[in-house]
Image 1 (cartoon, rainbow, N blue to C red):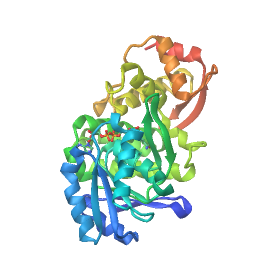
Image 2: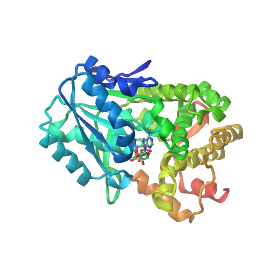
Image 3: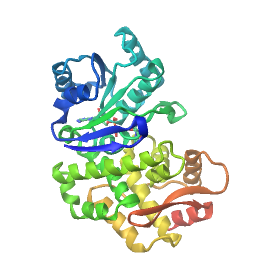
Length: 357
Ligand SMILES: NC(=O)c1ccc[n+]([C@@H]2O[C@H](COP(=O)([O-])OP(=O)(O)OC[C@H]3O[C@@H](n4cnc5c(N)ncnc54)[C@H](O)[C@@H]3O)[C@@H](O)[C@H]2O)c1
C-alpha cells in the first residue's frame, strides 16, 4: 500500500492507495481511532456497486454503520440536499466524534465534506473517492461546497478529511469518458510540477485507459503533488492557485456551452491547451511545449479545440469566473513542462489568442 501524508500540523491526514482497499476501510478507520456509529453517504449508482462491501468492512471492525443515499448528479449538490443529510444524521443521533464517510465521486465528496464541516460545528469525515477525478483531485485538499443557483461551489468551507482511502479497482465500473475526464487533472500535475511525470504519461498514454499499474502510479504521483501543494498553501493564498491551470478557460467553456455539454475535465483539457498557446504567444515558453501539451491531451482522447463563442462572451465569462472587473486578469501560464507562473493578461492578448485559433 502507498501512503501519502497531507502535512497540516495537527490536521495532517493520510491518503492510502491500494487495490482492494475498499474492503479494509473498517480496519483502517479503527487503526485511526474511530469507533461506534458511522454514516456512509453515497448515491444509488455507487451505492449499488460498493456500499455493500464498505458496510461489511465497517461492521467487521465493530462499527455500526448506516447508509444515506442521495440522488445522483451535480444538480443535487445543493443546500436542500445537504439538509436531508443533516436530518438523517440527527435522526441517527450522530455525535461529535462519529465519522461521516463519503462514498462516491466529487459531487458526493464535496457535499459530504460541507455537511461534515457544518454539522455540530464540525465532525470528522473520510473520503472514499470512486471516480478518477475525485481520486486525484477533489477528495484531497479540503475544499468542500454546495452549489447556489447563481454559481457552482459558492457555498462552502475549507475543511480537511481525516483520511482518504483510494481503491483503484472501483474505476473498473466507471464510464470511459469519466476516466478520460479525470486524466485531464492528472496531466495538469505533470505540467505544473513534474516534467518526469509528464514524460511518464507521454510514454504510457495508451496504457492509462487500461486501468492497470500505470494508472495506479499516475494516481499516486497526482496525490503526492496535490498533497504537497495543499500542505504548503491550504487556503489558496498563493501556490495552490497553480492547480487552476486551464480552469479559467475551462469554466468559461462549461458555462457558455451549457453545463453538462462538456465534462469538467474535457473543458480543462481544452483550457490547458489554450493556456499553453497563450504562454507561447506571450513568449513565456516555446512552441514545443504547446505541441507536447496538445499531443498528450489528444493521445488520451481528450479534446483540445474550443467551441466557437463570440470573443466578448468568452472574456466576460472569464471575468465573472475570476470575479474581477478591471482590465487585467491573472492566468496560470506555462514556462516549461513542470514550471508555471501566475501572470497578468490583458484583454487585447486574449483577443489575439482567440483570433489566432
Ligand atoms: N473539492 C475539490 O477540490 C474539487 C475539485 C474538482 C472538482 N470538484 C467537484 O467534483 C464534482 C465532479 O466530480 P466527479 O467528476 O467525480 O463527478 P460525479 O461525482 O458526478 O461522478 C460522475 C458519475 O460517475 C458515477 N460514479 C462514481 N463512481 C463510480 C464508479 N466507481 N463506477 C461507476 N460510476 C461511478 C457517479 O454516480 C456519477 O454519475 C463537481 O461538483 C466539482 O465541482 C471538487
